[in-house]
Length: 267
Image (cartoon, rainbow, N blue to C red; front, side, top):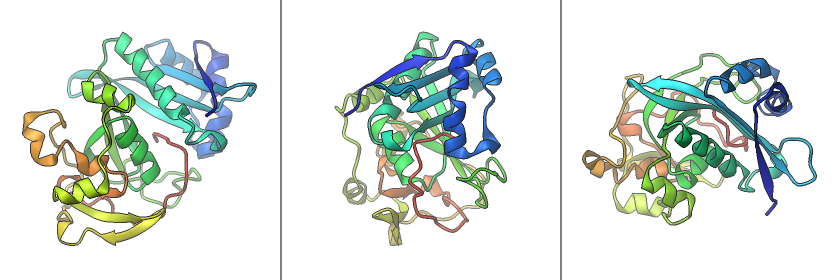
């Protein structure tokens, strides 16, 4: 397992170091300019790069900014990317933990981002490793996107929320809270729409599938609330082999696509 050092960006050079990886991951059409990143950093935002030993090129980076949601301050994590040779190395989690520490120092307890609901690798990272949850679904959230990952596809997204100050999150990061498996969800009768078959979509959930709804979004209670017990702590979304039922929402009207093997990313 390679060792990494995390460098928090405080100047234009640190922000500019993310540009090549942005281009590699999304193409040049959706790059966040380093000058804008620097302005965000100087106003409470966060940029950090991860470096492997003896490699001067960033192996990954994370970028986020302050926001307000439901009348409360929170941190929106807009981008996270890891270079292909370092995927699965633990770097993405180290970057998220550095971001978490930054936010806790500011008194912020929720970090949020958007995620493609059909990206199983990202779902496993967000829900399985980090202990995040989701309760909101957006259809075609960004509209048409020109980058190489999203071109020609509707930009449906789920809104991921990460309660960084919660005990469940600490336990998940330390490996003390096991992420639920598909068998756990099936035993508890949790609804799902699609089951993975390796890296490709597999069988549907059959009688367990959640009903379709035409509403653009839906919200549920956070998983630590007593009123959320029927959701079994949001295990529908925590299971990496499921496309979640989303509390009665259909995950997507677009054709189900196979995982593209991208890095964990938040756009």
